[in-house]
Amino acid sequence: MIDLHYAPTPNGWKITIMLEDLGIPYNVIPVDIRGGDQFKPEFLAISPNNRIPAIVDRAPADGGAPMSVFETGAILIYLAEKTGRFLPSDTRGRSRVIEWVMWQMSGLGPMLGQHGHFLLYAAEKIPYAIDRYRREAARLYGVLDAQLGKTGAYVAGDYSIADIACFPWTMTHKAQGFTLDDYPNVKRWYADVRARPQVQAGLAVGKFVKEPFSEEARRIMFGARAATAPQ
Ligand SMILES: N[C@@H](CCC(=O)N[C@@H](CS)C(=O)NCC(=O)O)C(=O)O
Image (cartoon, rainbow, N blue to C red; front, top):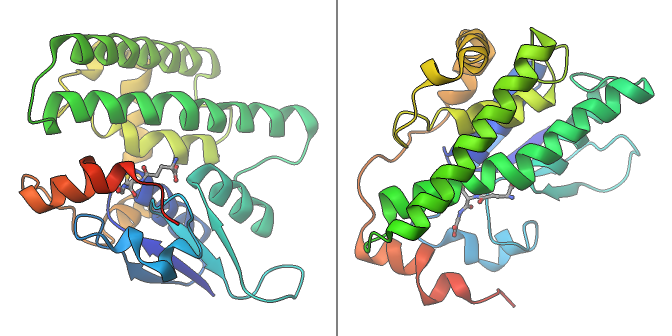
């Protein structure tokens, strides 16, 4: 059994979608990130970066004690290797998928995250920051569009953890002022991935909080508390 420490956000959805795609049982353990659960010692013991999601595998393949994994890219690779699914085993196919998972982890996710922060969440609107991240986000949508134009299918060929990593972040496009009409290959892929029943099931886990951040949530997530590395 897998324990999933989770909140319904793009990074959280990567893992609910993966677990639904795999069809394996999992327990959801909610982490209230607006309330500061990510700083609790029991959570930090499995996720030292004080971010969701994280998993604990109670039956790892080596037959040993339960083991934890944090960082969504690492969790996706772990689950793919555990089950032999959504990550090809041949040298080239495997490398291609990992390439795009790393691209998502270092580019698409963080840049869309920063764009969303400065555009939608920051109390002070800073044009330089909004423009910088908007340009970078637009560039990354362009890179994804070109790649999907080349494969004509999914991000790295067949449906894989590269799609699962990228898809939830592209769900922010409307809120961030992008239209997929500008990226026709992304538009085609987005509709295809979104229509998967497993993706719908993953997105339905927990309730996404749409309300604006309270002052206390801002202090926890964006203020002095957030800037302090947990001990
Ligand atoms: N690189 C991390 C990013 C995880 C992340 O940023 N999670 C957010 C929610 S989407 C979080 O836990 N935020 C809590 C906070 O900012 O205090 C991963 O891919 O796992």
